[in-house]
Length: 206
DNA sequence: GTACAGATTGAG
DNA sequence: TCAATCTGTACT
Image 1 (tube, chains in turn blue, yellow, orange):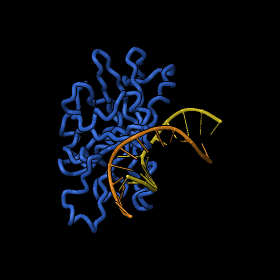
Image 2 (cartoon, rainbow, N blue to C red):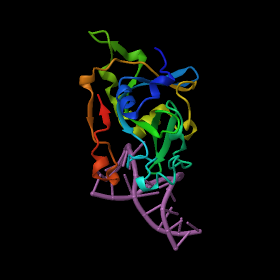
Image 3 (cartoon, rainbow, N blue to C red):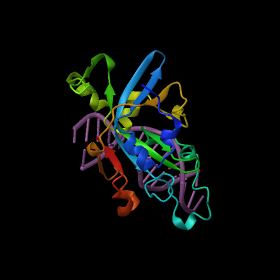
């Protein structure tokens, strides 16, 4: 499969979040490759998004025209295709993919993947890949944003890594997803952002 | 320097 | 339902 290139990521987070569904995350460690299919994402759209780490109240935007850049969120301002990873609740890593142009702090949180185990991969009637039932337990290892980071062995050392060039992690074209099969709903765990932003249906899954 | 909440998880 | 666990950020 072909690696996704920069152009894919340099688009609005809402578009990339939907297009990421069905794509494969490939994590290489020496000869070993761990592969997961992206099945759930969330978009964070920049300074005006109250739930974003780059959120900046309208009243302060003139004072900080570059945005609210801190040591924690500075990777969000890189050009699309970089990794923004951070720790929540003191123990869980959250894997985000930066989108858009340099200076625009948009990103997509990867909330869930499905492990792809090549040795047990089956071909469906229609020619696509399916994961055999024996692997259904594996799903429980990757059905949350913190869990999938543990599964893929991702941590702070991936902060700012570039997916278009990295030798240890990248994305590949995967299954073609029918637009009709994409579901959406409110993002998770961001009630602090107030009703208006918490209600935005910017979580996508298949 | 201190306080505090958080884009979660797993156990009970 | 709740504790675990630690960092960034906003205060004094």
